[in-house]
Length: 439
Image (cartoon, rainbow, N blue to C red; front, side, top):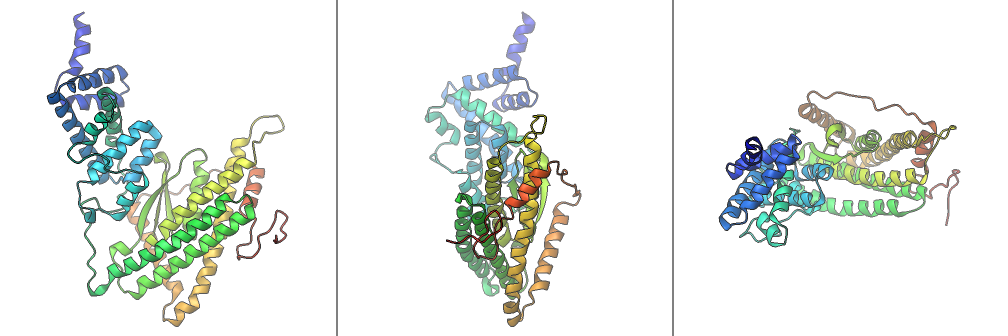
């Protein structure tokens, strides 16, 4: 009896911070009974006003510390949201969003990278509670019981505390300094680019939405090619504008963006992302174990890569699923091999076609640039070199691996055909046998 009492009571003694540490450790060591004992004790302490204040203050403080430490290890809001989607329940993901909004709210907006604030908006992370209370108090007042809140919070804290170190792509919150415009007009140039970005990206989104919604593969490819042409021309214009302004600042140089690559068929999906990035003068590094690819390039290109990759993935999945399942002559399923080969071939051919469009735009823009005294080819080559240098600096121990070989010939040929249906010159698309469609 004495041993049993010792087992049940010892883990529930100590301060609130000690109890939280035990709960997180119990999660990591897969000890559900200990986790239940500790979380029940924390919830029981919340039965009094003094106890609730102590638990809430401890949890909120430890959460802030954990999130800040994750920022310092290279994580951004969208990264944590992506990891949360893989391991947390939906209510726990809501807590994670509250925690990130709470931490970023402690910094003046002008000292936070705008991309971080944009990520908060994209994942719907915001301060929805009154600033006179904490997110934890607000969730309790909205009807969630203390035990549920404590359990959810411990799951989020465990996730954030155990995130590994990754490359830091942007300044930390609180470290961004407002641009000094002055006579150099760097701020004016970025403002001009931003206003152009909005218009161009809106047109790109419209074209890609049409590509995703049409039932004709040829039309989808034509819309996609039009989007790539717009993005390629915008990239060229941005490069020329930056060159005409003189010296490039760190903010104007190559940047990085992480894009989720989830299973199944993550290898072919990574190949598709790499193909889209390459066509837009970017490089991709795939971190398979964490489920994302890091795209390195100039800011004018990164948004284009993410938009186009996301749309192409939607289109490819739709066409792949429309092909149905496959079986060999013995009736054994070969659907996985077929679909993997389909996506690999699709990525390969789409990359070829996107590069064709980008090359055509560069050749079209070169004479105009030359008339203004700017040599476009060496300018873009210099930017490519800086992208490569940035990749080397961020990933000094990068290893190259070949993707898995294609194991289904039918999937390969159908995948190439799905990426090769349309004319990319803006004229009438072809039907399945190569004839021009009219009307």
